[in-house]
Length: 136
Image (cartoon, rainbow, N blue to C red; front, side, top):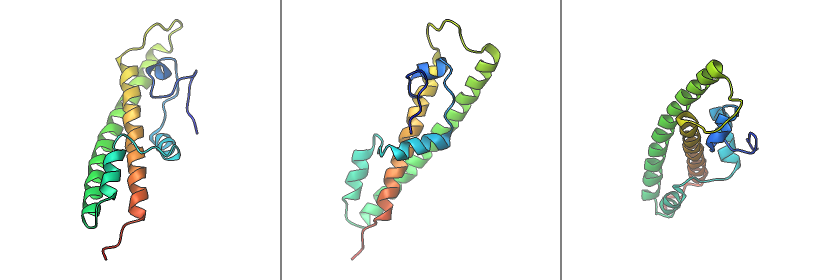
């Protein structure tokens, strides 16, 4: 599953500036999980996975709590920026002669990346919790 608009991914500000559709959080989650990406904390997650039980479970739970809290904040910011983009588009429409993108386009592309990585980290953690080690 790929999401591009005029050759740009939603993680690029020109995607939004040129009129790319806003990607819903469910679609972002599907993109992140289907890409088999583990996010920028993959090393930390893998290190925690190599620990002996019960340290392993405690560390992975702590990482998951942290990732979920950050993902909630990122989703809130993403929804707010997407709403602003809808308002801007309904008021101005699309530019006939695009020259530069503004802060809204840049912010939305960055927060998209944060949400994408958040879902990727959650998917990686869920994959590890399925194969929890034994305590024996």
